[in-house]
Image 1 (cartoon, rainbow, N blue to C red):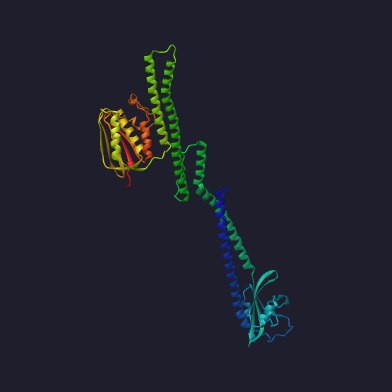
Image 2 (cartoon, helix red, strand yellow):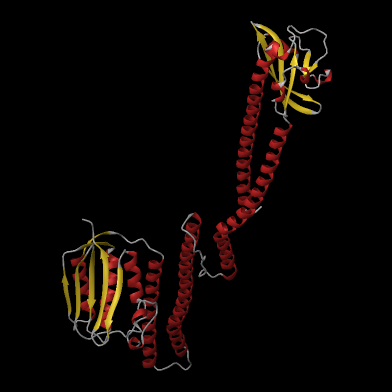
Length: 476
């Protein structure tokens, strides 16, 4: 059974219970009110009749009654106005203290109304008695009232009225209310079905969106919800946010896989060149007759250079792999000035003719000493290779971070090349003549980010480039 149908049935069941409670309450109130009204009418009718009956002289009623005498008709009384003033629905009988019929409208014995033994006892004791009995197939409410003088019960007055009309009215109300309630419940079921459909439409859309994503493997789909931001609206918004995060994660994974494929292809290409050179040189050394000693020496020199190149490439790849694997780097307090001075001194040894200027403030950062030196050496080596003038190294405070800049006066980097300088094995056309594998800056980026810092390159063609690094300052 669907949630929509369960909601509709639940609405209808709750409404049915409420209507049943209201119907029973109204039925009970009407039953008590109409019963009390009938009792009140019978009491009022008995008051005037009682006084008339006790006025024996005016009604020519023999007191005490003669036992065994047949009942008299009301028309035989000399003064029968009290009986003529009775309502047509009211039935009156006059009994003696023993419960025998004394008078009735037609003066017949079969006109007697039933009276229980217990009721007769109560009446003889001077107390009223109410009784419901079936007379000639009709349910009657009978009010029995003792008529007494000087403390002695002389007569028993019975005033009755049929309950059939009341019962029919109550039955009609029950049927009418039941039919109306059934119509309301059926209508509520239909309205509940429509309302539940509108309420659950976002959930249906979520289900359809999930199915579409599963079939198409496309996380760009979203739930189109334009309703209020209630629980269902929040569910739709949460689902859309989840899809956005999944799409972002999926794009990252796809990008990583593509980068891995490109990385493997680039590594294969970079390794193929020195290995091909080594294999070719070995073939030359194996030739018969042997090559002259001078040529063999040149071949061995080339092989040594290619071997060194392979070693550097493998070392760079190992460094990059460790950085990608999230190798735990130390997060210790490092005084920046001594490390910068040492790094600049080592960089000057690479090109003694070049001037490297250093300007630093007394800063202490959190990081790994060896990793920081490697990043700085990569930046300085990159500046020395791609420029011919002076190189500036500065360090200053930038909010809660330390900013290190390595600036050169080289030709700069074209705008179309700048976004790719941190890509592995990427080398722009202007740097193809410079030795290297295109792994320096990617290694620097990976190490910097593992230390909690950021790295970026700013460049302007014809005016040089600036490598900027930000590292968190030590709290102390």
